[in-house]
Image 1 (cartoon, rainbow, N blue to C red):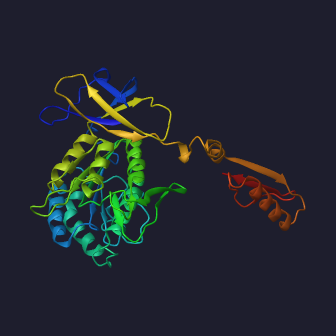
Image 2 (cartoon, rainbow, N blue to C red):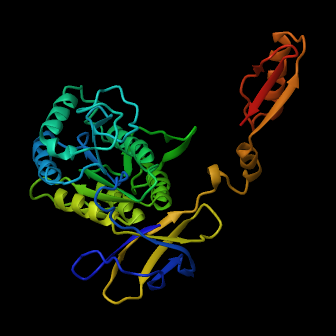
Length: 406
């Protein structure tokens, strides 16, 4: 996991040693097996992707758009180096629009603002041109038709889905990183008076249950979707990939944040707490971006051996023996079974993780025989294994059919 140390004035502390840290998993002290202090690259060295900014237009009302655009411009324009900062918009159509994408951007049907997607290291800070770039990007996306923006359930589903997809891409970066989410937020409990259905999100080559439809998760009598499974799974990824989330609450002037369980504020706080990040409640865009950039370059990587996976939530606590030091660290994680396995289906999951090939000589065999053999293999291994169609390997004769089972 990644943690950041601050002194009493909120300034990063960068001279701590491994002996000054203590890690507690569900209240039990765990020995540290690896320690690494991360430092800012020296001048001339390339910077790896560290900070992703997501400006949520889907949940931001029109009158707040220009105000937050101005805050973003004033924050990003003075940066001396922008090659570690990446910027996306979540559009009113529920799509992710790249303003300044990763070198391998997410597939999108819309062209991005700015230069071509594939490029080498930046020779100057792209943020110097953020004003015309962001203005053009917002003009492009606001030409799209709003997609059911009055339905809070649709907006919440799209927002969490796109946050998950974008986060998965960004968290592949081989270094500690931060996500700055500028948003009014979406609730993780949503009431449906006329019934609902489970929310299923993609993951890798499969899917998982992101939101569970059930009776009254918010204390009411009608149906409700609870996105706790998404928050737990996404939070566990933060811990594994050393990613922190900084949420900036978009508030109308004079408005108060709703901190009730299941609210939009609760969603941001759960993601920040799980990752060791922070929530900013007073439109503090500049502070959030500045702290995320600073913290990602002054972190400590701590490694310990966690208990075996049991599918339960584990509370984490990191302490520093030096007086006056505050540690920002993940608050917990869900110890998931590998590939969703549990004691009841562990044997099945183990088989699914195996990969093997069956090679059969088929000299002078017709394709009808090959087709029948394929059906036989599929029937034999179903439902635990799936087989791909037989492939013919050259040269021939004799021909050889290979069945890859995954």
